[in-house]
Length: 198
Image (tube, rainbow, N blue to C red; front, side, top):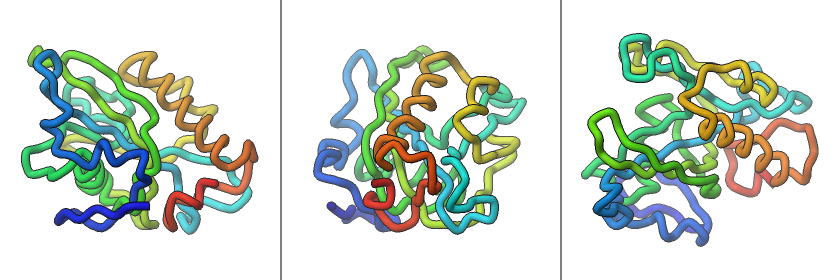
């Protein structure tokens, strides 16, 4: 397990993610210059609505009605910024900015999405499974009108950007179950490190 050395809050990541411990500009291409990150976060033990026997629940944020993609549910995330020393730092910063949660571990890459932004720029979004320290979730009303911890069976009925996003969410739940050895309980623990998922 590696630790970041930047100014961001301390978090760990496995050597398999070392390729993302680089400046976001190193992942940019001429066709897709914008690097975007997303974080799939599961409710840590110790959350008031979590118990050892409850199924895993993922944090989703609902975009504000006045924002692009109004009222769409999404994982915390956004575009990498010049101040982000690495792509992994961008993940930690976005999670903190959008949810007030502190990333303790970036566990693995779940997948990528390529799309064109509303301004016409090509984007590549890197979606990671992350763990956070227990704490209250807080969002900025101008960006997200609400948040909720969702179970896997609740995802199908949600308004999301597209089927690719819905597939990502389903894959995240499947991966967490796999990391836990296929068990349906206890809940995923996100506070202590990547080993908590195993």
